[in-house]
Image 1 (cartoon, helix red, strand yellow):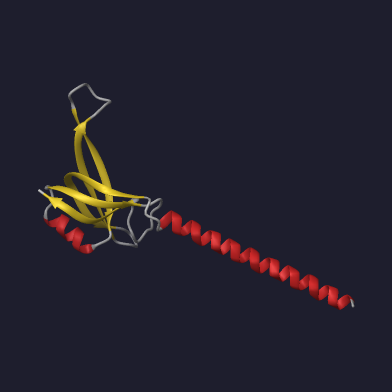
Image 2 (cartoon, rainbow, N blue to C red):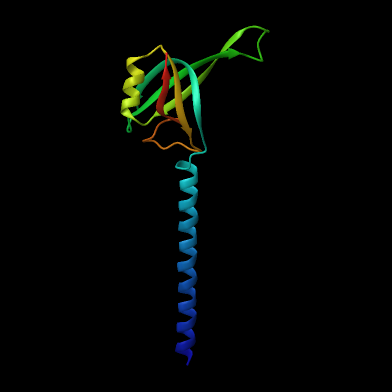
Length: 134
């Protein structure tokens, strides 16, 4: 009789551990998906392409910078200021198009994530296509 009680306690504890591990893995998976793969925002940025490079120690990624011009609030009235938009590029074809047209004005479509992944790039902004080039 005492062995039956022992088996019931052991079986109940084992079920608890299995359920707890399943919940932890599920929560961890959802958190990782939300942080690194959920597209938080997307849009278009316009400006003059400053540079695009392929760099990295282990993971070689495509990175770039777009210079946006506009009127600033923190400067004397009427002064132009520039805003920098640093981004990563996943697609090699988009990188080649930007690289061969450096210095031109572009409209770039991007996706914004909550976090960075080393093989995706160094920024949370990932350009996926060129919508316009001037």
